[in-house]
Image 1: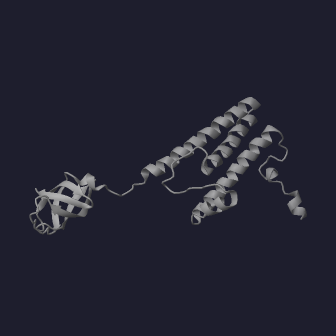
Image 2: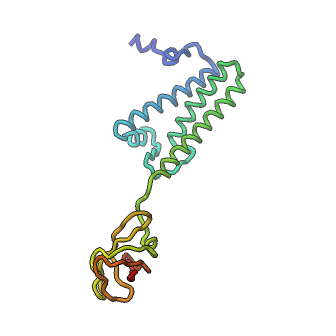
Image 3: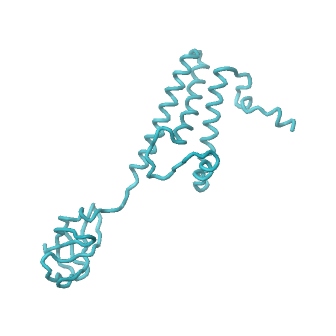
Length: 198
């Protein structure tokens, strides 16, 4: 127990004799840094950070790519704490004065929170949905994949949004269209394309 009593985390990082504002900056940087490393470690071992932080702190940590950035996310708060502390310490150690240190720490923290948000927003923008509205197929040309019988259904292959897709289809005039014939999509009814010979 004597070893734990003498253990001082601030002494380990060179701030054993810190006091006042310097101690606040060091604590902020230390807390933000530890949370960042812990979060990153948990994220790397299978994404359990969501469950751990949600259960321990009651914080909604949405790590999915569909989460849009909000200023007060867990990642944003971690970044703010870490850079607020580091920026403030840097100015304070450079004899910039306490007011300037708080100002610099606030700017560094806010910039890192904003940067974190933009980074997550970039991840969201990079993700593609992959779904296509059938109405986007109107005007597309393709071929009949499975024969469209008279008054019945078949299947056609058309290019929509740069990808070849196969859809159920019926002919506009009710006439049959043979396999391999060229077609053009003229309308959509429910989940079925209405096509005519091209």
